[in-house]
Image (cartoon, rainbow, N blue to C red):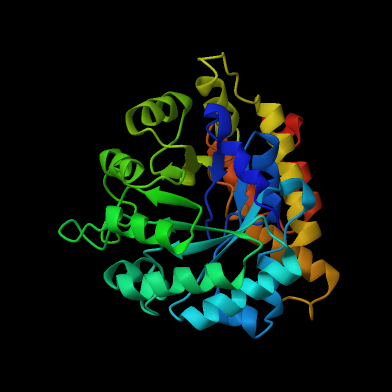
Length: 337
């Protein structure tokens, strides 16, 4: 895949990324964020070994539509050979615009495999993985996502960024927290600015971007080439439109109305039921729909945050079993009572 999508950084543009989030950034949610202005999308992160074993569910997790380009697939793992093999398979089968290396996930199940942010304690292994993947996919851009370090006393953000640049990584996204912080505290954008000053490749800043005003301030303070929005987009995918309005000079932004949000939730539910199988092939069509609706309803808290009567609405949605139930519950006449 040609690397011409990197021109998105040219001319002072500040592209907006949707961060990879396990259990949330599925093909349906990515599509909604794209409609609201997300410029670059990344899949849920997947482990390299299941890809090599041709695990059907893992391959479904990295599926995407042509309309979602530029689109990246994020992989994690501790073994350089496995990561390289997985990347080569992805390049051949999926032709993503880029392959993203996960050096930042703090989740226990990832860290315990010596992957994700665990590699911030083993820079030689991190470097070996980055070089192996870059060599394995010469026709595809390789990017990486990282944190500041394992803990406050072991910050390695500048060193890691330089290692990645020297290995051939073309863009680095930096979450302004350490592994030990998880998602607590406040993202340190001064440290992200230090990464910007340490390398020549584009640096994408990530952490606590939830509105246009904050996004504009962080760009000015840090000098990042792009922004990555994660939790700030959950339930509020229109945050991308809000941020773009701010970056264009403070254009007035009007959030979606209640009716528009309800219609968006219904659209999301329809896409989930149409695309998500999640290993339930042996179930009847009706039971698959029930499972999909159950999965979908559990992720709606943010979407309903600004809606009138949200507590009653959430309770009603929790009782839904079918797509028809969801549509009936979200009908304007029902909610306005």
